[in-house]
Structures are given as C-alpha cells and as structure tokens.
Image 1: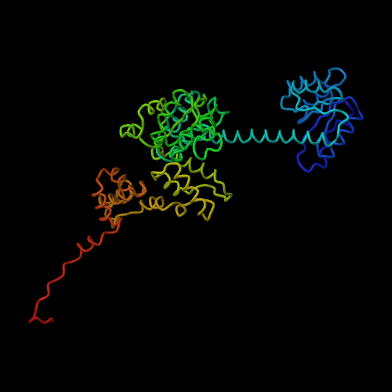
Image 2: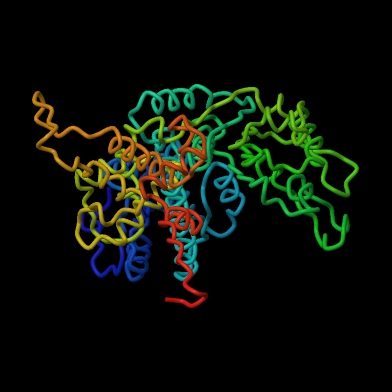
Length: 499
C-alpha cells in the first residue's frame, strides 16, 4: 500500500455526498496529481500502488469508480480488472493507458472496463468521464428504487385483507402468477381487478417486462385495431409514421385488457387470432410478427350473458376463460373494511396528520355495504381526512349515507319503561319501529338504490315505496296529500244568496 497519508479518504469541502474514487497506480507523482485534481472537484479519493492493495481496500470501504493503471508491479492491470469485475461487479473501472496502447484499452473494455484514459491525462477529460459514470450509477440506483417501490405497490400483499376471501385470493394469485395461461378476472366495479392483474404480473417470471393496461371501452372508434396491433406509415389518413401498437409494447411482459366486454365486436375475431397464435399484423402490413405476451382480461359484466345476447363472441370467451379469478365485493368481506380504510389513510398524498378513526366511525364503515367497493371506500377516506378538523376521523367527517347508519340505533320506543327486556335491561322496539329501522338500513346500505333495497328486504318496489312513504322516509306526492285531506262540507243554498 502507498503512504498512509495518501490513502485516507477525505471528503472535506464536498458540497454533496461525494462519489468515491480509487486510484491504482505505482507512480507516486501521478497519484498525488490525480488525487489533487479530483479532490478539487469534491470527489472522495483513496489510492493504492498494487492490485493486491486495491482489492484489500475495496474489501474495507465503498468505492464507486476505480482508475486502474495497466502497468502495475505483480499482477498487471488486465488481471486486476478481471478480479475486480468478478468480486465487485458493481464498481466501474476506467483503465489508464499510455499513448500507443489503445488496443490494450479496447481489450480492457471487452473485459468489463467502463472506459479508458490515456496518460498523461487532461483533468477536464477525467472529470467528464467520472461525471458520466456517477450519473449513470445514480440513474441505475433510482431505477432499482422505483422498481422496488412499484413491486411493493403491486405485489400480492398489496391486496389487503385478513378475511378468508382475501387470503384465498392472494393464494390463488401466487399460484397462477407462475403460469403464462390467459386469465379472466371478474368482479364488480371498484373491487380491484387491475390490482390483481398487476400482482399476477409482478409475482411471476414476467415481472421484469412491461405491463401494458388497455381500457377496451376507451379504444378510439375506427382506430382500435391500430391501437392494439400497430400500423404502417400511410395505412390510413393520419398515419404519418409506423406505430408498434400496444401488443408489441407489451412484448416480454403482460397486456391487460380491462373492460373486455366493451371490446368492439368487429375487432374480436382479430383479438381471438392474436391470442391463439401470439402473432399480430399491423394495419397496412402484409406480414405478421410474433409477440411474447401474457394476456389478462377483466370485466364487471356477465360474459356468458353477453355471449347469449350476441354482443360477445363465444370462441373468444372460451379463449379468455382459461383461468378465472373472481374478486369478491367488499360487502362480502366486511371484516377487511377497517384494514383497507387504514391502508388508504396511510397512503394519502397530503401531509395532514390523521391518526385513525373513532369507534363510532369504524362501526359505520363496517356497517355500510359499499356498492362502489374499495374505490368508494378509498374516496370516502380521502374525503373524511380532508374534512376532519382533528387528528381522528369521526362520524361528522364521513359521507352522509354512513352517518345515517350511525344514527339508526338511536330509534327508541315511545314508552321505553312500558316494554323492557328484563333479562338484558334493554328497551324493546315495536314491530313498526323495527320495520322502519330495517327499511332505513336497507336504503343506507344500498346507497339509495330502491331496486336493490327491495331485493334485500324480499319485497317488490311498489311495497317498498309504500313503506318509505308510510315511515315518512320520502315525501308524499301532491295527489297523495290531496287524497288524505278531509272532505269539504257541502254549503246550503239560501234563496240563491250566499249566507
């Protein structure tokens, strides 16, 4: 090793976390000059005189870039390079060569060197190469960090819930993620079908490839084929250049066809062919190209009913329905509501401090049926957090339909003392009061959807309307008010004159 003073890492004066550079050269004057030059540019610099000393130093501290001379005592620079890349593949190596040894520098780059510099070097030239390498390392690290964040965001565990239904769904995702079979995800709007699709991609062997989401209902009219399969320049008016299309963009990864029931009927035969052959033909081209994609589709509609109605091809349905995953609605896993609500609360973008929910708010969240599923719950949590004047979300912060649920148990008999359950010490309700609360609860649970409320109650809509008016839960019509008004008394005539 060189002089101990030379080998100290000095970051003094650096205005930012300095990149660490190791200079490996047996020329003392060169080491000192290069060190001074780099430290003036805020690099953290250490030095070594032999390959053996360099490897020892790398074992003790972090180094980003090594400036490695070819001519060294003992092992030459090429041999040291091979050791470095084998032991520390993440370290960039720049070879130092003399004039006339360019072929050696080229050979070094073939063996893993990032670049080379001829000696004597120009300080600005070295600084430029180092800046490029440091920036590349920063971008690579940022890319790794973002990929890790995305993988966490779209991992199997991102589907929250401790209910049996949630656990079974996660297990199904883990199992099917290892397959390349076409999958069909079904479930109501807002249940998290795209989250399941992304988890299938992230947990499988295609995780390093692209995930391309396609809204089938949003494909532009007349251009849907071009959007999916690409086109050649001049294929139609406005096709000013070649376009690869979404299937080609997903090559090596997954294409997710959301709202597949809305795929234009005229495009369905070409989609069927792409699924069967994994080949696509751009509009205006007479040749096909193969694509390596996994196809995942999703729908909130009954595809069997769409097939029966002639709106969806039966053969395409069979091709999509190789593996089916059903995402249950939130009302069927009420025990997951609080965990999801807390997750949404923690995932908010604003910095307002909200610690959680009051017990009353939790009860209301868990009592509501969430017809819009997890998406509705997320919106309700964001709204409540924005409106809350404290650090805990309470009933007044929640949407009206949830607050209404909280008020339902407050209904009490007119004379509680006259009818008490002596065993429980709780007031009993009359049948009328119980019925009124049940009707109110069904309306709150369905968000005011009278057809669904009637089905829950086991009555028809006409009966539900009558109950709503009877309990003054909706206003009466003018005709009904007139019908209930007392009849007018006939006035007696007196000689044709009014009294």
